[in-house]
Length: 76
Image (cartoon, rainbow, N blue to C red):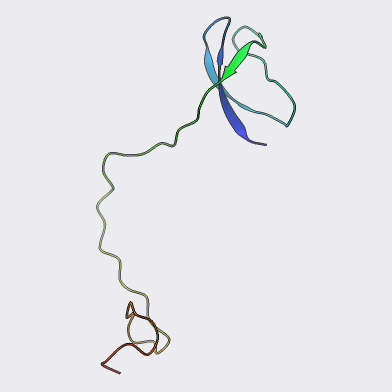
């Protein structure tokens, strides 16, 4: 079941609800079914947490993670 965000047209209460297809929820504040579905947005952060730089994964030879793929490493 998807989660949708709504605002109640009667009491202006904003809420989220798990909704099955073809069903309309009611406002948990006033039980009205006169609702407006809101556009959901993804939460983001202003800055990523600091962490160590990612290491390249080992290639098929098990020695390096050359970005051009297998056989491209000039050291092996």
